[in-house]
Length: 127
Image (cartoon, rainbow, N blue to C red; front, side):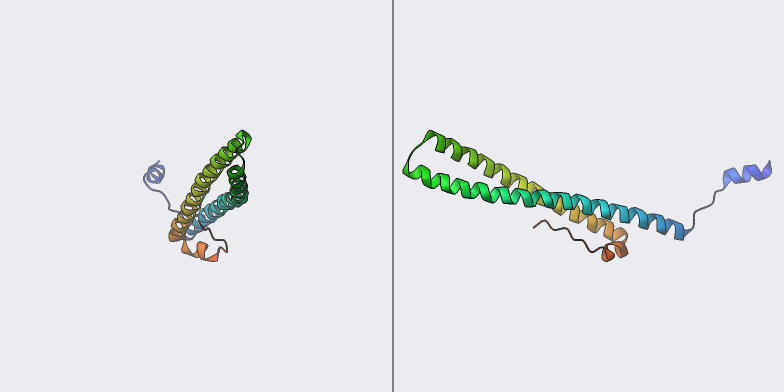
């Protein structure tokens, strides 16, 4: 009975080595997760950038054509392209901010466990 009371009043800590390994494992998973999300955002941004350039080119041609002949269809198309371009610019800015936040998160993880980030070959860029 006395031994049982002592066990209630005390506990054993895990070894520092085990804690370090647990922290390392969690940090590695966080880094992989951040890298996966960054890859998704980068892919979305790349595809959107292509569509943005195409919309800008189309708007330029529609604007040139509208200057010579006034057409309701051309004016509607130009307004549609303008709205698309504005929406693309907003989304590209948002995706850039997402990449910046992900880079900051990765840096924060790196401050907790710098040896992990130094060994990771991936990089995140908001450019």
